[in-house]
Image 1 (tube, rainbow, N blue to C red):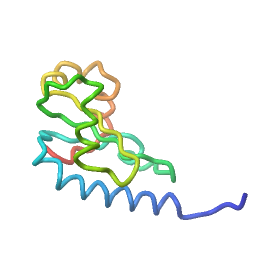
Image 2: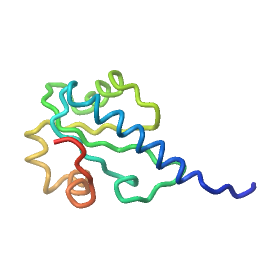
Image 3: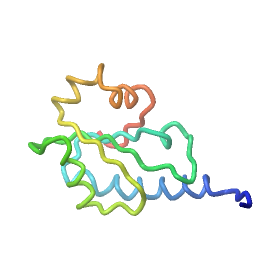
Length: 112
């Protein structure tokens, strides 16, 4: 298979454009805080890189159902992972949850 160049840069541009779109749409839907995490946050983009967002939202939904709200309302155009915590959960777990520790260490707060 021939080697193709430039896909990672193109993917980065696509992810950044999608992130800009979501930044506008998320606050009216209840996002109190949103942080970019994962490969894009640390500039390690490949053609398969997804958009990984940690959201703080006041919600009564069970943890495993919370991302459904964001997927349904935002209809992401690229592979996007929404990981949603309540404000209380975030505060309680920030020093022990590996995802939240990565957000604090390498993440980029984009809302809040």
